[in-house]
Image 1 (cartoon, helix red, strand yellow):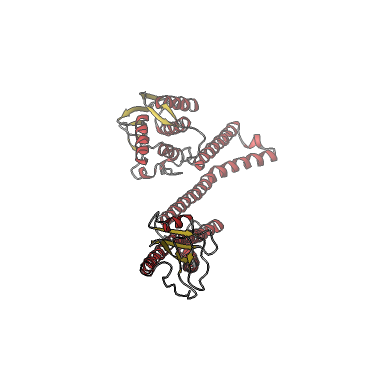
Image 2 (tube, helix red, strand yellow):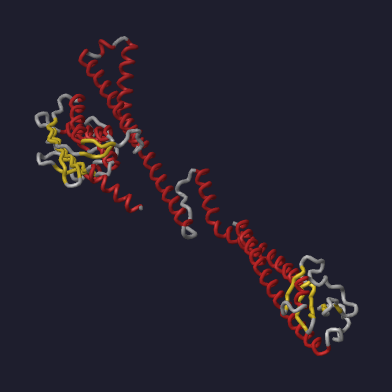
Amino acid sequence: MTVIAATAIAVSVFVAFQVASELLDWELRNTAEDQLRADSHFLAMNAERAGLAQVHLPPYPGSGRLVRVILPDGSTRTPVGQPALPPVSEHAGRVAQGASADLMESKDSDEDGHRIYTLRAGDGAVQVALVADDSPINRFGLGMLLIGLFCVVGGAVVGRTVARTGLAPVDRLTAAAVRVANTQDLDADIPDEGGGEIRRLIQAINDMLAALRDSRRAQRLLAEDAAHELKTPLTSLRLNIELLVRLDRRGTLETALSAESRTRLLNDLGAQVAELSTLAAELTDLARGDVSDETTELLDLADVVVAAAAQAHSRVPNIEVALDVTSVWVSGRPAALQRAVLNLIDNAGKWSPADQPVQVRLRAEGASAVLEVDDAGPGIAAADVPRVFDRFYRADSDRASPGSGLGLSIVQRVVHAHGGRAAVARSARGGALLRVDLPTAAATARRATGEDTAAC
């Protein structure tokens, strides 16, 4: 900015100097020519009264104007001691012969650069000349040079001062960003200062830091909750394995435990391993957040629901699912949506009595695809409804049942990522009713078109 300011001022001073020099030269030339005309008319009047050959020509004073009289025969008279003038030009000779009344000439080609005015007088002509004097322009140029240098230096100083003052918030912002990067301290907000673009930049960085703080806090909570949830199955698994190892080393495995007890113990070990595997998969899914390699595509949500119901039945054959679905097209990630629907069906199947199927309904309602999954179980207590979608949250009545408490949390994350919402209510059969609203493909397209139009 300092260089730009100095360069701009230098160019401005140069252009101003060129324009001012031309104007000054034009003014001086007009003034000199007017003086030459006035002096020539005065000399011509004297020459006509006294005659060209007798008119008095005072001795040259040493400086100033030069005069010359052109006689009818072409000869000339000049004052005593006056420097020689350039020879009479052909055009000036024609003025002396009466071809024209006057002539202004500029002898820029000679050494002194004379400006000569020729005026018809009697049978000849008179000439008054001035030696071109560039000293005023030279002095003016020197003055403009000094002023230009002063302006350039002053402009550079002012530009640097303004630049440093204007960019001081950026320097502080850079220092704060470097400090955050070095200390990893995301709690240190950058002071909101400056104005315009600088303030918006600081606010954007503070928003980014807030988002990073929330992300770090969520990761820490996830790690803490995961450690807590993993502790119980790992402890149970470790105790059962230690019991088997201890009995095997003593050689009393078959005598200490009956065949039925061993079978039950091995089944427990298998169930605990499966629970850990499920928990690890769900933790991985939650830790990834919204990051996915799966692309968004246009799909029929009814196909996703049918596929999820078939998968749930293959995993737990005793789950009976009653489907009532209609074709509703949405824009989304098929695998993520199927995982969410599968979690809803698994959750409902865990509570639904054996003789009561899980009812799954899908319909279009306005600009939304509405999915409802309900069971005939005991339902969700009013105190548990606000936290039913929280990670690892399990109601008191649910703590003894298998599960990680992550299924509904995954459902909510997938639904939110698709621009929808999930809610819980009481089913008409007395159990839990989980409802998911997703925007249809037409609604998503209209919203995207509206956002593009607003951006334009």
